[in-house]
Image 1 (tube, chains in turn yellow, cyan):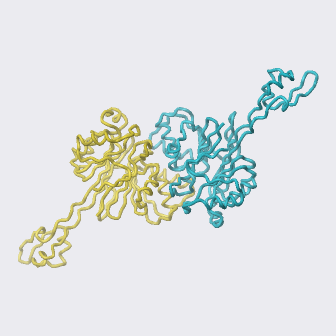
Image 2: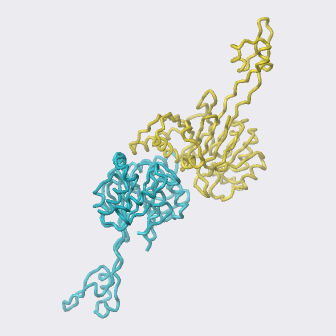
Image 3: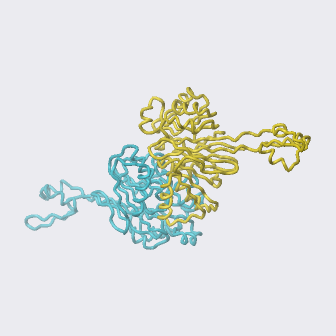
Length: 301
Length: 301
């Protein structure tokens, strides 16, 4: 099953060099999650053929404009296109007021239910049979949250021949899928792994949002398959990064290394940089399995 | 002196076929006026090399998102780029609340003065030695204003040889430039046109904004050099246009004809149309001097 992140915007603050403000579409099975929604995101979704009808959950990390100014346009376009299914939006509480005010002055009534979830503390924010989403705080100028999307661990697969040979009744197969052992009438224990095949473990993606270098993020994102971490600046501008509550290449890569993740994706590049090669080489010097978040590219998790 | 309108967005409601929501940059001498500011306008300004530093006056016709969702992004980008000169914004009063709320949640303090002018009734809204701007009501679902930018009539030029021959003292030349006649000591009147050359009359541009077909607009825009009028639909969808408070090609062209303008520019095309040829032929059948508002093109007034 597909689990991947499509980059819709990889730039910080100002649009530049045809790079757009932050937005990512995460495809997990049939769902598309949108994380952040900078100005022009609805055009980027069309450009990269991400189906907006599949977006049911939108996560906004914080209320700097380059992370949410495209949200109201996307919502109203969904309404104009006749969307009917519920739309869940997760973000800092004042976001609801901003949305409602703009719908109100336009006398717009959406044809679908907009369900707003205000983010105020770390924890589980979405629990679904197939996946979960948690949020965690990052250290920025204003309240800011990262997100971890976890695919749930899948059930084990039955080894039919072995299960039949062991005389396990079919009614018990659901419990086998969940990993239970089977005990026969005469007290013999048939170990689960002798009658089932393991399935792939659930994968996970962490989006770390805007942040100053904060070692706690390595703890919060420990062991995820892929970590996205902002790298607004190259390493020589570490002081400027700190002053503006942003991170450098080496800092992002250090977090990835300490978190023990498999892959690092870096983005949120400052508009001062026309080319991005140095971001990759600097980050890879600390964490080799790093990729640049390039717009229009989908990174598999 | 240059007086022209550069189209940054010519589409209605939803972006489609690489057409963007409404925005126009009007260059008049050294000024750039921005009329409407749909999502992505700051990117369109960059794409078509319109200098945002020259924009000191922004006019927002009404609070449907396709006419202003790009404003907050443009304003904050101007701030990030260190703009210092005043910025005047003219629009429906709730727009100020929308701007202030979004600056507030981001803890943003702009490095320039934002001077807001709430539009509540028709009339003169900007008076400058070289130009003036008026607003007028159009008939839409919510309060909506069109704008007329008028270059002021320039002073006449002195015909020096004739003025000297007529013994008119140089101190009187300023009054000659304004069109006054001169009376000699012995009561003889020297007609202004015998000692001055006429100068080109001031040009004018009217932006009619979203509107149902409203014959009053022909009166309000009487005799302007160029009229921009919305044509959301082709003529066969006149009923749908009326139901949605929009206009058709033939209706826009009828307004232009009745207003006696020199040129008609049409735009705000519905996203249902992939090609636009029929808009031009239908409008030209009523008003031949019609042009399609195409993004990236500058139309001279």
